[in-house]
Length: 337
Image (cartoon, rainbow, N blue to C red; front, side, top):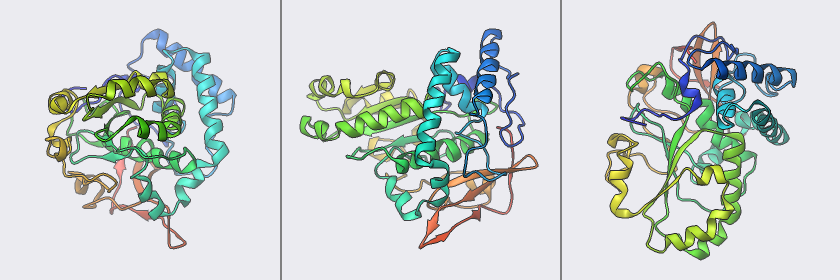
């Protein structure tokens, strides 16, 4: 990525174009003839296997972002280097995981306070400007459950489509389909690494299986001198594809390393940047008023709906036992994803 533009994902080869509620079109611009042929075959086999049916729990107007839309399918296929059988098997596995814990329904019905609590447990979005979606987190012990997928879906179902609508970035005609993760490991010891081994295995396995190509890089910041020994100890617990995206960064190199990938406005102040976003909090977003007609994002899960080619952000979840369905702002955005 350069100057705040995410690069490296297969999905980013395609141009943003008009689509009605995530309808798939196998004639996707930006792919080679071979890739186009593979993508068409992949779509057909997914359709034959019932994998493109509207997920249970989605209303007729709900967008398919992050579930079985074109960009998501391209991420799965690109992660397998356009090996159609391999991508199909992985997509089936991800589909089965989601169905087994009813994640689509859970996204609408999760308690909002619980959802906000998850921001402090699982990787989450934190950005101070419109150019880049960055996630950072200091990991704690946790088990990957429906609650984890619900938290991670916030990125693929709401945040990445939102970032794709922002024109204040290089190549605004290309969708934003992945993110950089910042993980502070200042106080990680071998004992702590051992205690979170289950979490590390589960979360990296989940990211690799259900969210391929969403992770661009994972920067491990403030690595102590002893971390080389710790890394040798924990590397075998982490999914190999995810491990290959890890970049270990000592304290002295944080700013120079992050500036190669992230705009300074989006680097947290604690690391020398200008972002005032706080870990575990809903981030401020520059330009949000112009996009959605609101000054700030509400707490809890948010999704997109599409009606007659227009996207509307809808805040969902449950507060004090009452289901929430609140439209954000007075208007909508022309659907171009």
